[in-house]
Length: 83
Image (cartoon, rainbow, N blue to C red; front, side, top):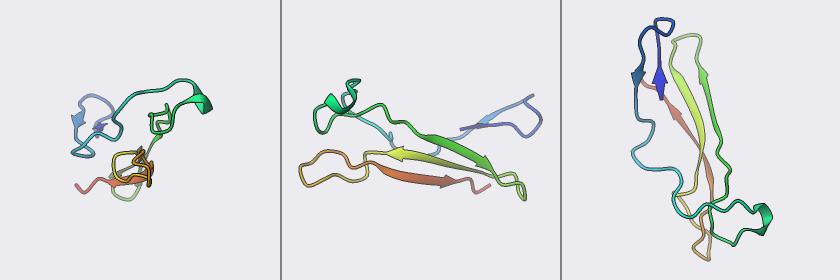
């Protein structure tokens, strides 16, 4: 994440997570993709708390859990800035 607190004159870059949120082959065939291949669903949404200026980021992560057959089970994750 990159954030500016001075109207864009300077930015500070921070890691949101220590691991990648997607790995593996990318399939662009929609519902024709083989089971277990990564689709192109990338969801990133951020918001700034107006009370303290800290950020919250919502994103999808398919590296946390797997289905019974071993294919990824995407999860929605949220990260909160702490300071």
